[in-house]
Length: 222
Image (cartoon, rainbow, N blue to C red; front, top):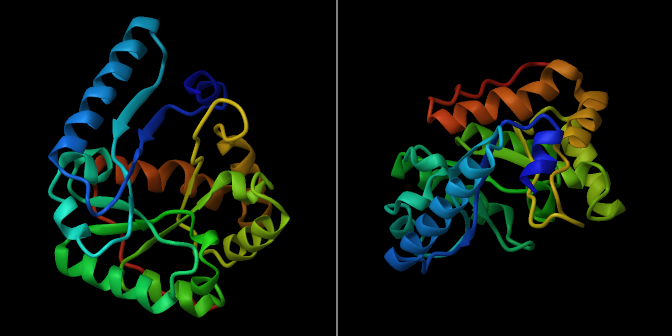
């Protein structure tokens, strides 16, 4: 998988194992152990790529408790966390989680936003989430048809609004769901232009990687 990433020009990869609101110190120890094994393997093979550790946390009532662990925030900076929701989660619940995260002083990156049909019914929903501090992301594979035509159509529509801020590969294996970032970037460039597409795969992810402040969202009149 990393060799495929390198071939596409990817230089940094965040490892985001799935977690939930019941994850605990044991999960943290396991993730840290496997992460070290992978880093050692990369060093041994001298692969020109850097990896970081985070997690993709499924929404649950005790998610705030999980955020105390090093694996819970992206690259362990304590600044950003990747959150996933059940597919039919109402928009109001997602919005409330985003508002809660603001009180917790962490920034939620909403994973594969195109998969939540009740939260991308209109551009106004995207604007509300961004206004409250959410970062909206999309899977590159979704944009190029990896998950079917219906998801691809929704993905193209919401990318075209300009409100998707980060594009990810969501790579799970070295076959059907491998890295698709180069293809996704090209597809996004057709919709929003090459400079904006670059921001979603280079500039914005670098800000998250480094734990830098996120720019305040300001609506631009069209």
